[in-house]
Length: 261
Image 1 (cartoon, helix red, strand yellow):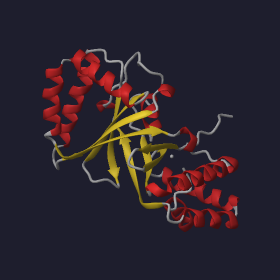
Image 2 (cartoon, rainbow, N blue to C red):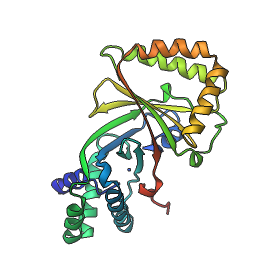
Image 3 (tube, one colour):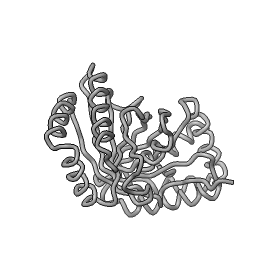
């Protein structure tokens, strides 16, 4: 059964990041864990990949599962599928649920899905990340409702070895700046647990669109003080051996959120 589960995830016919931020904010101070599957889709195969993903989601919904997942797509054709998990032991229950889904679907349907998915992506990888509530900021009165903010701006921070503590201190200063200036846009920070180039962190901002993000980013900086922002920015990036920026969107059409009974 575990072999079927592995094949299932590798061909990526179950679907799930954007809701990371929504879930993280609702978790208050709990350091929520997430199992993440990242799939790099071939640009020429996006339409076919998305068609198959929706087909798989229909089957996943039909046969049901207690495990919700959330989908996020970045503009460089990376698809992120994210399952919130309670702890590492929860992975066994997740894999078991996926294995049961394969059995319910039937071998013929399963083989057909696997065959259809061949050649649609270049590679995939798994990782587990942890929300860092102490390095995140949630405004008391957010400018946007969660359902209004499907655009995501992310910074992938590859911290220099041994600089974790300084990174924490720097991001706590960002939290203080936002809190002290009553900024109405929040951000969430996550740390890589396994499957990442550690030490690894990433942060996410949400907005209505790219233009909405940049307009309000400029407004935030002016409110905080551009010199303060510039100074702390320089101190923060000095801790990185590498940093990458990504933009993308939450894809509710690829996500599975079971209805409460």
